[in-house]
Length: 238
Image (cartoon, rainbow, N blue to C red; front, side, top):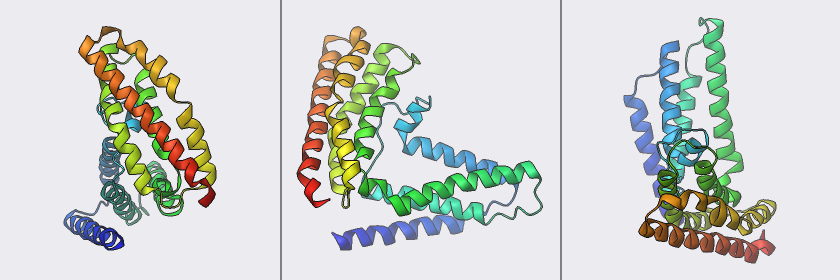
């Protein structure tokens, strides 16, 4: 497994480094704005629940991919963008452009810091429980679309939750006990969100669609509860 992880890291570094060499280095304020726009678009696509929560509902049927390759690729992409921003010659820029540069750089440095030091995917089980709960709550909190369409999006997300939970189990090599206890509490109190709040959107579903929603919901709840049990068994070693 360690050899596989090392291979993936080396492969991804080569791929990203190669793309960096081919890309033109940004040097001007318009370049900065284009780079920032591209980064935010990339972020929204890679964190669809975050996007839904922020009011962008393009990827409402998806959850974040927490496979090892996806996690590493996202971290490397942040490093690449940050390196480009740091290298920009801003000495002669006007005040507003330099402020934009500093703010964007600071945001990227924050993401990079937490990736390197905190490593949520490996240490914080709440990452995966929150992805599930926010994945549904972000579809409920505003009437941005018809109840039926939001319910169908919820069904699509519910179907992905058991697999997401398994990804979490595979990633959590160094879970922090406090985070695990908080995740257990959240996982065991998630039922009302799924069985009560979510079902208010189901009134316009066909019988087949509603049945699909209920089956997916029940499987998701069972998986999340199982995650809490899995964490509880491992608490003594944390």
